[in-house]
Image (cartoon, rainbow, N blue to C red; front, side, top):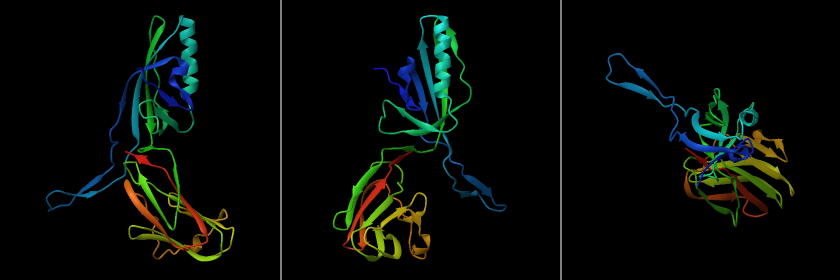
Length: 244
């Protein structure tokens, strides 16, 4: 079976490309820093963040003539050139995608009417899965994060009755918003961006900053509780699994 990849909403097979091999980093570099202290053995570690991930793909394309090969080469160039990162998905992991942009030049090695070339994509450090959406039932939702990295949830609470606060708890941490909510209001709490919106208007001043924590969801199964209010709301969680 021949595997390929999707990039910029187009599959490689559309251009007659055969993906011969690929090099996907298992783990990107981490920009840790170490400080050597005079008079002390060893060094102090200052943990850093993950660097971008580089994925290299080797491709081959066949044509019926030299003119056809040059035409295909230009079509491939148009496809791969973008000004921003686009989704990159491989056939052997169809439910996981990278956000990637072409890096470096593409050199075509021509052998008669066949061509070989390598493509390098510079990607964000983490790969992503499809968004998962679940509803709270009786004030609780059980989520099972299938990723290998923490997920950052978004909560949406729709009020069917008036309330004075919203509190959502996970494993000893909570997010609390204090405000008079009316019937029909929609509250959105986005832990990825730090936004707290009421009917699409920012209300960060109503967040209980002293005690609230924008918690993440670690891999595995977790119970998340809508502690307040206990009635008069419909609530759901949306989160995107992330992978090293």
